[in-house]
Length: 199
Image 1: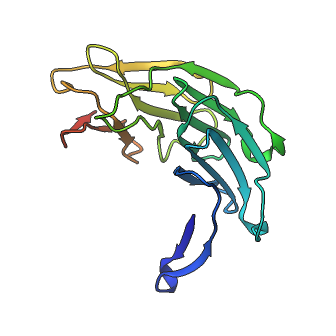
Image 2: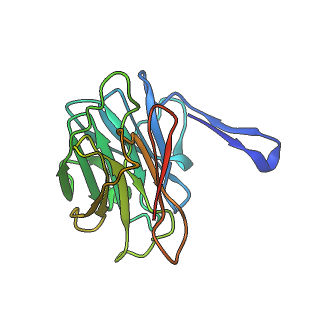
């Protein structure tokens, strides 16, 4: 993992080998020093960047049976959301406060994440500005037919809505939410390069 400070002409702040296998995602907690990494080593690791040194170990680890596509802190920092190849979306409350082994998620959503070799993997994404603990929401693509984007409540793990339509003709592997505060605007991209806007 490399951290570049663009305010200082791209100076490398740190450059650490945090895994022997590919890291799929890196997420920084709003506190500014807790970092979550996830990838092909089947682990989600929590690091304290203030204490990184040669031979550093993560302060907390969550183990999975298969690789982890992504792990992202919510805007408030209360939750950590993971998308796994074990076909789950896992929500961990207070993951940044853990030490040692994180045994079980606060909420586990069974979700088909096997997009196949020709499609990009799913990576569930938080709404970037829904940062109160009562209103955290995330979006992810779906293998279900008819094709759709799925919206979930980050506090309960319940699906709020699955959005379908004539424009969604293929799996939207990558989804995100616009930081608009007055209404929900979501974008979904498929492997053909098509972007669908939902509002």
